[in-house]
Length: 315
Image (tube, rainbow, N blue to C red; front, side, top):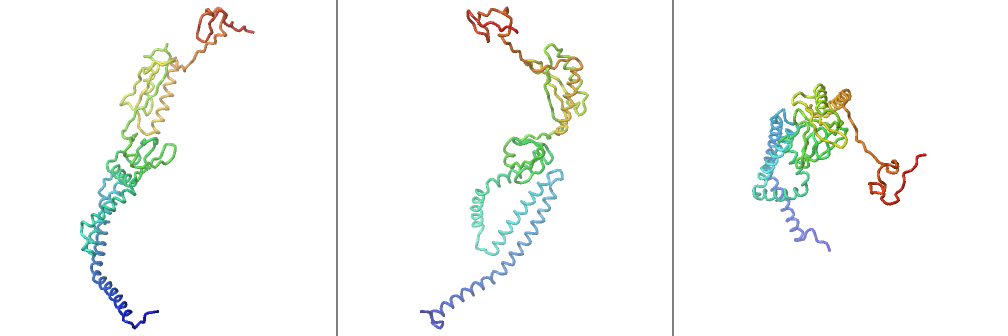
């Protein structure tokens, strides 16, 4: 049975609904000046944030990485906007106090922190790398098992171009917490190579020849000076360690190494210095002469006894 539109109950419900709508409309118009003021405040804060971001980017020294200015500018921009949102919210809803906002922000930050832990770790590590600059774009580094040239340093990862033409993206948290070798941190690097000479050769003469050869090679630095050390008495050779300094770029290091090895080998060979290779001597006892020792006695590789095997006869 439907209610009559003229019944008292229907009229009461319609009146309540109208009062509710009227209250909402009146409340909106009452808040409208505050909303407009908050919107104007946000516009001004947005303009200020953009200006601060530009100032921060220009304030970064020209010698620093360009990414550092971008990151600091974005951070300052986000902080100013966040403060502006708090101020606008306090204008629209003055009943919401600073304590409630901080509590809400704390709960939200904990939840977001757990959800984006790795992202925040890489972000913080990237900012610290850009601030401290242990290496820069263009440096050659070794990070973990990867060696190459730094292409770019971003807030999340560092891009490395390996020597064989591959791009490796290494998370900044890994670079910041693990050892990294910066190959081009200084303007010179030392290389070395071991050269083996014969035991009957004159060590002093061989060292003098090798040192004179290295000193005259293009790309070998005079300071620090190259040197040659008697390094090891190996099984077949006396090893001389040849050491020299050059510029740290990989292309230069490889070119100089090629010239050093070629020149040292040619000079030592021309002087009659032996460059032996490892040799082994194998004794086959069943092919020795019958007069070679007493076969009734124990020898390495030969059975003992009263009736030992006889050597094989040659055809």
